[in-house]
Image (cartoon, rainbow, N blue to C red; front, side, top):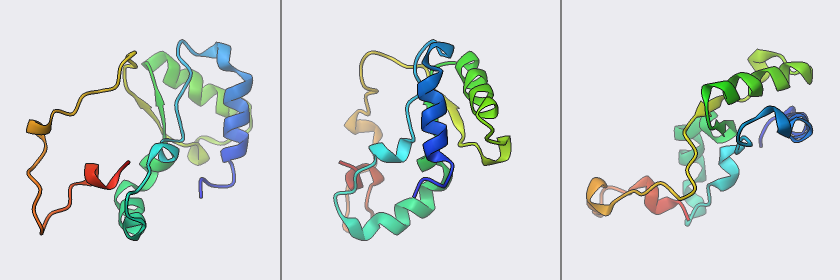
Length: 114
């Protein structure tokens, strides 16, 4: 599901934890849990490469991520993406007011995730 190189990616990141200010998080797809399995193909199609991507805390950690994988022999074109998102010690808040209202004709993605 994550691609043939994911075990090597995980091992390389685990071996070089000290190269990062904050440990990369991922693959992000492992944190997606569907309430209704019938949506899995739609979510996989819509989210595509995001599911195999990693979140990193800073631009410096993105560079360390790419170098770590290159040193592990994983060519850049086969590397998962690194998305820079400033890590916080608390979850990001998605206020209900910022989300569209529910309706029978529209299913919010957030409702599909556990």
